[in-house]
Image (cartoon, rainbow, N blue to C red; front, side, top):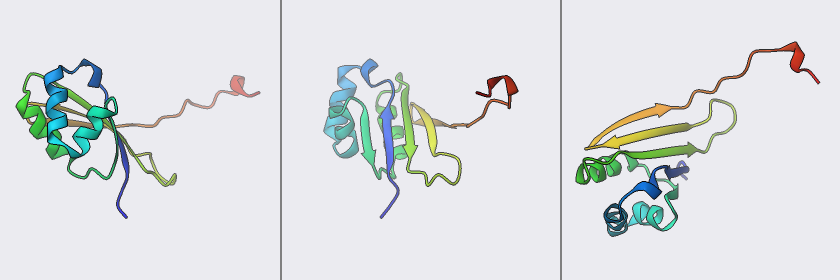
Length: 107
């Protein structure tokens, strides 16, 4: 089984050609992402370690990776964005909020 996540490299179109070429060389999920305009769906459990390593090769580039996991609808959605630079990562989990009740909005 496993857990499916849709991965999107948000700044894919801003990356230099040498980075895209390197992603293709690395194969697997990176190659899928390079050929699918920054998108890759699957069970990429090592994406953190893989992007840390790639960002170490290109230390001046910030890689912006978003993920959308398969939620079951009973809890908060699995949405996150990670930023990778020079072998380090910052992960931000999405926060879902609702507007307060406003009787004027009733229709």
